[in-house]
Amino acid sequence: MAARIYAIANQKGGVGKTTTAVNLAACLAEAGERCLLIDLDPQANATSGLGRRANGVSTHDLLDGVPLAELAKPTSFPNLDLVPAKPELAAAAVHLSALEGGERYLADALTVTATDAYRFVFLDCPPAFGPLTVNALAAADRVIVPVQAEYYALEGLSQLLGSINLVKARLNPRLAVAGILLTMVDGRTRLAAEVEQELRRHFADLVFTTSVPRSVRLAEAPSHGLPAIAYDRRSSGSEAYWKVAMELVERQ
Image (cartoon, rainbow, N blue to C red; front, side, top):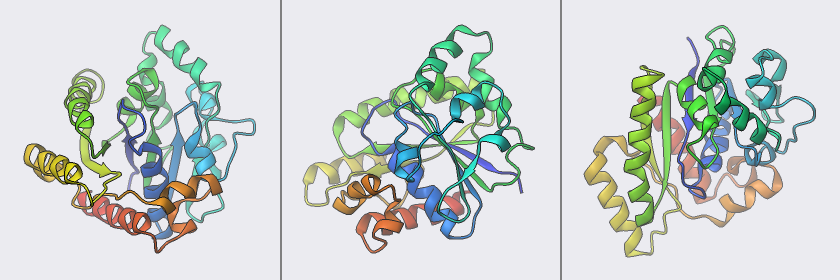
């Protein structure tokens, strides 16, 4: 079966994109699925979140035409490979914006042949709707949109979905939204409940059944270079991402 490529995207920062990318990849890898995580953010948080650094090769090389097989490296977690990022990736974003057809470089790199070793490929996007995110959407089959449980996130969501539809129309007709994932939910507040209610009213089944709670253990895990399930599998955040991962499989 060909790999399914997921972009984790939202132009707003701090909504849990990297946390979602790292933990979904780790959960599915632990479930026995071959997974690849491609870090497309110059901040390289997904890279450090798996306890890795870009020593030499990085996503920059992938966009520069180096074959994926030469760049994807095993992590310390079975079934999970990584193409790391480093700050120089920011320069690639500028370069891509100046090139004709620059929005399709990643799609050209992630051909069926290049990704046939994997069942799931996750693209962790930067917090901006720039050339790197457009490349991810042009290469992806599906988009997962993490949304923080606050009202400003609701305002940005409509804009993001419009941009996704634009990429679908102009660059990638197979692109679709896999789901909207509510993150950083504080179940003690009325605000979180109201935001979730609004999301489900407007987007119905597009919203994942499981939402991800605010969790100290989930927030601590990246500083140890670990996904949540490796840091504390009994935490509420770990359990939530397990459920989201299983739901994602069902949505395929």
